[in-house]
Image (cartoon, rainbow, N blue to C red; front, top):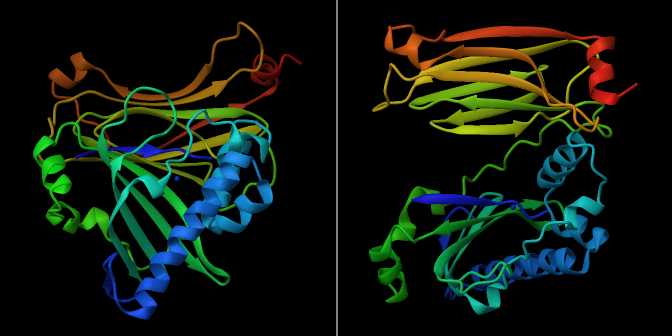
Length: 302
């Protein structure tokens, strides 16, 4: 199953959507209202309603990302061209709550308002229960294009596919990350190419990243610092992966000067030729660089 994480602005027992127990039905209705309020906030660009409807952890992560890209908050929350799907037009398949977490799974023509003809897929909404009640914590679009048999089963009312662990809440809310206090001074990104491997990064002891069998660039939360910057990494093989595959880890600094290409102050790499000759990556390591006045001028133009 290929999952596309949607960037919008994303009970001790399982509760089926047709639950007859009063508390189960109440939870189902409350979760639906929470999502609808969050969706209304996104459509109306209502920052106060967005804050009331969104989990604290999600708010911190969204704000961290926006400020790390030196964009305005909260205006950027509502700048996405993607519209939140209207779940009233979808079929509610499963609503499960465990502890202070919940997931609601919907099936149907998930429409993000980007044109074209939506097909039948899944939309999974996550929630966290806080002191004031349930809060929206994220949405995941599950594309069933490569799983036509599953799509047919769900359309016929067979919900067996939804008994996989990905459709169950964790029970324990995600821990809130550190919160940066304002826009980063320098925009920075971590790039990793790691076929057949898992790479974990900790940058400047606060921005954590996990890459698995992928090629991707992540925004570094908090950006880069004046002076010394640190990148810690760990690498391990994924079962079934090629142990002789190349690997690349890079730290990029994004310039705000027109025409200035990104700077690459750090790189750890085993290229294809080195990998074919048997060179293996380190299991872990630490890289450092100093962001001094010359580098700062290339980034800021002053």
